[in-house]
Length: 166
Image (tube, rainbow, N blue to C red; front, side, top):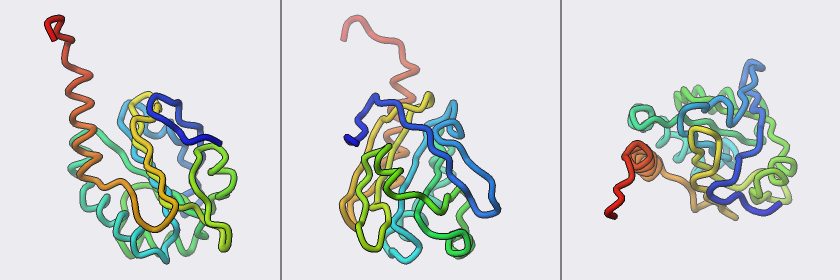
């Protein structure tokens, strides 16, 4: 699958969160900018730092008009522990089929053990890709400050009437 580029419609994914509820992406973000993070797993210190950073920035992101969700191949118990350990309040999906997700989104997959490499998407309010960040390893990922600034900029310029003299 080719990488998702700006303007591409984001594919429909169902994230199962601990407790069995399903969150549909991009539908769950409808009317808001969405941030979807694929993380390598609870064992990854870089992923933990990214998830904690997005949690700390949750008010800033919400004020900018962005919502966050995450997904990994971890099992339900590991994911529930991750959520509790870091006080995550956004949906965190578990049990991802790494190869199927990669086929839909272009995310890189580690071959053995199988997991999704760090991947991040910012989606516009109708579910199209604004930014895609693909990593083939532990580093290279979205940071909340950049996302909040991008969303504020996009919202400001989407709302501003075009100046015919520009």
